[in-house]
Structures are given as structure tokens and as C-alpha cells.
Image (cartoon, rainbow, N blue to C red; front, side, top):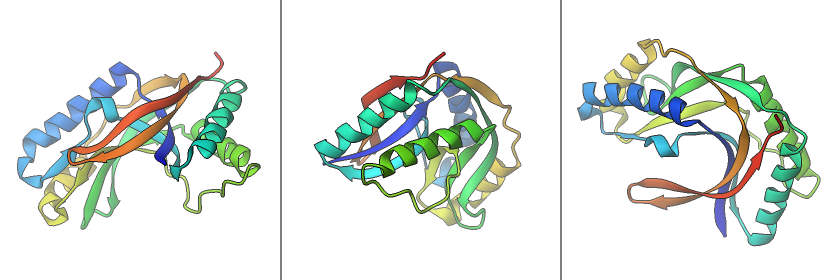
Length: 187
């Protein structure tokens, strides 16, 4: 069994911009006990599948290849700041996604494609966001969350060129991701 999800990866320049923003916050609030995501782990999750066996993984990979072959590249903007679940009990710091209609459309297509072979649609609504930190001690992170929410994050715009299927393995240092499948969107 592998714990897998599909995602859009950020290009290097977008990852660098996000990493610089996160580093500034980390330096300002070292006591917050935030677990900052390294630049190489930044991604936009499209669909989380959970633990799947090899047969299901093949179905997921094939569906992603079929969709990528008919789905055009699209522009995404990382823009805005937010926290989950709230500023009073912050557990996740995230950056928003503007112009996410194409991303949401891709997610619906993945859901529809996989529903035809037995995968249920995800019950929760799709809220595209870029997680930048997980907060282990919400009371100690309230000031960090307030600061993050008050920040103006200059939009980072890039072209979504491919969709990937990643495996997530939980480690003491946080989740590690490895590429299982990559499908280029049409130009």
C-alpha cells in the first residue's frame, strides 16, 4: 500500500519566492514551534487518495495520463494568506491560489474519471491552497498566525505544466514525497 495524492508542482522560481517569505516569518517567530515545509516539498494538492494498492495506483496513473493528454496548461497565481482552522487555533499556515478555476476543473475531471472505475468523489469541498507550515503548539503560534494574516504576499504567477502523482511517507522530520507518475499537460 502507498499513501498517494495528485498535485501541481511549483517551478523553482515560485518555490524560492515562497521559501524566502516563509524564512522571514520563521526568523521573526522562532518560538512558534512551526514546522516549515522545505521548498522541495511545496505543491498544490489536487486530489488526495490515501492508501492504495498497486492495482488502484495503476488506475490512478492511467487516469492522470489520459487527462493530461487532453488538458491544456493553465496559469496559477499564489496570492493571499490564510490559516486553518482559525487565527485563534492556528494549525496550518497557507498561501492562497487566485484564478483557481482551471485547477478546480482539473480536480473535477480527475474525480469524474476515477468515479467511473470505483473511486468515490471526495466528500470535502476543494479549497486550493499552498501549505507553508504546520503549527505544533497553536497557542504559541497565535502571533505568528496574526502576522502571516496581516502580510501582503506579492502574487507569484506560473504555468501549470504537468500533474504529478506523489507518494507521501511519514517520517519524524515530516512527510517526504517521491514522484510516482508525471504527466505533461498539452501546450
